[in-house]
Structures are given as C-alpha cells and as structure tokens.
Image (cartoon, rainbow, N blue to C red; front, side, top):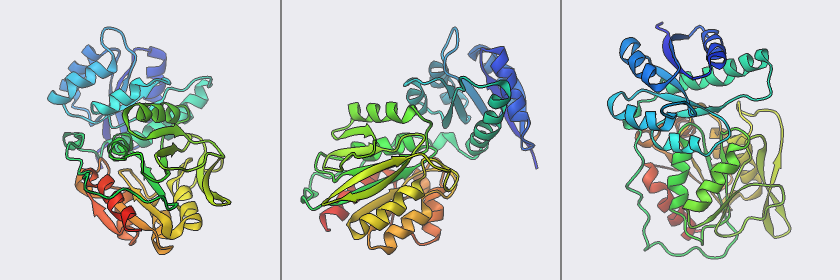
Length: 342
C-alpha cells in the first residue's frame, strides 16, 4: 500500500525535527519534505505533490492563514494546522484547513514525540481521506421564518461532531433563534480551544453560547459546549435540566465523547430530546444516538454529500440510529420542525 506523503511546514527547526520523527514513526506515513516558510512550502508542493500538509499558523513573512487563502484555489490539498492557543485556528478552519492539533507546551521531547505519534498521525490519516475541493461553507441554510415558535415545554437539543465540525456547528447554531430549547454540544477539540470556540459562536449567533460548567441550567436560547478535557452529561435537578462536566477515561476514543453526552440525553430526556450527529471520523456518537431514538427522542444525521468526513453519521445511519438524514443546510430548520411537533 502506498504511503501517505506528508509535507511539514514549520519555522522552528527543533519542532520540525520532532514532527518528522513523530510522523515517520507511523508506517503508513512518509515525510517527503520540510519547509521553514510558505515560500519554500509552495516550491515543495510542486516538487513532491504531498497528500497532506502540516502547517504552523505563526510564521515569518506570511502566516499560515494567508498562505492557506492563497494556496487552496491553486493547490487544494488537505492541511492540518499546528496552533498555539489562539483564535486564529478557527480562521484557518474557515478558509480550508481540515483539522488542527494544539502545539505542545511544557512537555519533554519524549512526551512531545508520543503526543505527535498519537494526535498528528491520526489527524494526518483522516485528512488524507478528505476531498478539500468539496469543502465549502454551506450557503443554502434552509431556515424558514414560517416555522412556529417553540412552546415553553422543557425540551433538549444535543449536537455532536468531530472533523469538520467547527464549521458545521456554526452553520447549525447560526440557524437557531432565541426560542431554541437549551442545547448541549460535544465537539472533539483540545482543552482551551473549546472556550474560544464558544466565545466565537457567541459573538456570531443570536443565541448565547458558552463553554459548559457543572451546574449550568439549560434554558431557551442557551448553548453549552463540552470542555475540551471533560465529558458533558445531561442531568435532572428537580424540574430542570442541567449539565455535569467531569474528567474521565476516553470513551469511543475521545474525551469529551459524543456517546457519553448522547447516552445521558437518552436516560434523562428521552422523548423530549432532539439530537443531531454531524461530520466526523470514527463512530463516536452512533451508539448514543441510537439510544436516544430507542428512548423516543428524534434523531438527525448529516448526509454524506455535505460532510467533510462521512464517518460518525454513516455509522449512526448504518445501525439505524438516524431518523432523518439531511444536508447540513437543512438541519437547523428540521430541528425546529421536529421541536414544534413535540
């Protein structure tokens, strides 16, 4: 089997060397070149035709985002960003990067190598499956003002996503009005970035979005995003739904896990829940979505054509967890249609 060809772009020689060692440790991957700036990278893209490129955001002469904006129209190749804790990573995802890893800090060289073998190698292999020419922001959001307002019955909306999910979640949540029932979200993302993602959505959307904390009470117009290092669960306190966030072992390969959240929704809300599983690699969330459907709740899966990676929604669909399969642009409207009938 042909190895996946990887181009590493980073201005730090020391970190680039660790990247090469970490990526090369995976027998499915081959580093074909190392560039210290976007100008070298452009020449190496032409020379080596890599399958995937890793790209540091902060670089001299031209940052990673500007490079992406110039690169994608001419050479649409999958890119995995390497980012310090910065909002810029969301700009990179918005202009075409497939995914990102957090730049390791306060680690020994051996720890960094282990981290790169685990995180970067996985994301590179996922990125290699993505046709970035199809990665376009949905401009056909089908949100109709004719949909009735939601009654004040206590209902719950739950959303789960992974690779490609930041843009997909933005699309769905921007379709929400302030009458949307309390909403909980699990997106596979490192610690720290989930708070920035929540703040970014809060500034863009009509609803209030925040990183979840234990004790947060679900109420209309509020969206809570699982912290990057804790599982989010739905719990009941008297007459109200609340969230509980706790660290724990990885479930379905992840912490936070969509399965953990969905399974808590099935137990706690049952038929009063609407859940959607969006783009992402793997199977996290499929079993939990099935539990929601079996408990009487309504379930939605993003369709293959609009997914960056049709992994999680496909597994969910294949096991019978998906009641409605829809393109991304139709999901927020479908959530409203279902809620108004409950």
